[in-house]
Length: 284
Ligand code: PAF
Image (cartoon, rainbow, N blue to C red):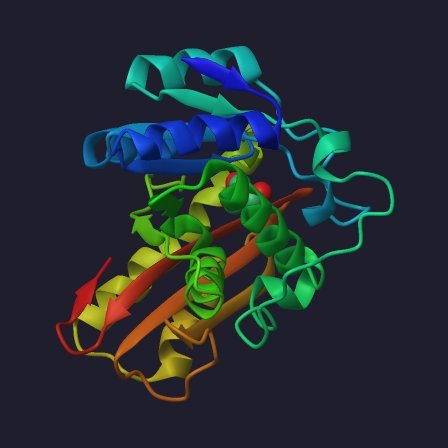
């Protein structure tokens, strides 16, 4: 497995693989890999000729009061896992190369980024779309893999990719959960045992919403209230039902809707969600 640090070397490697007729799958991450990332890497390895993992803790997408400095960094273990799964190259650029002096260029997706996490993290998504653009330009993938856990991020990247004609297929894979329901996240390591127990109220709230939706409940208030009741032990940032494509709040449940929650458990901000297709009645 190659470890590549510069965009030029990454692109040269990708061009050579493309010239050989290979399809390139790409899994962008900030490292601290868990089973959720592993599921993305496995899918990429299965569905493409060669696969690239990027590991880059992107400083710009963290607000000054957020956890950039203490974000878990487990590069060696991440590379071992990637190699075991069959990743061909790890792209791990340095911050100074990614953002040279006088860096001035951003990619912005409007509307979809304004609600949900965008409300409490107003500069977050433009920094995600910017770094993902730069990663795409270096890795030149045919397909890129993202997790449904960051549902808003996935919708934003899908829209950017379409609007700006990247010609990259965006594959979004289901949330991977711990046996007790907690959505896997690199930030779960911050939780004390007591906080981890309290954090379960996010997935329990969503499970209750799933039960209501599957039994035919279609009132937005009833769904949101049920989740709010389940989440009384944590500091709620938002509980919202939005349409799955535009990420806009819905007043009635039709088509594909996303029920998304964010909450602070102690100092740790966690997110989780379920997707509901009102036509088929299926929750994912
Ligand atoms: O989801 C993540 O890990 C990050 O937001 C991403 C997409 C790698 C961009 O830094």
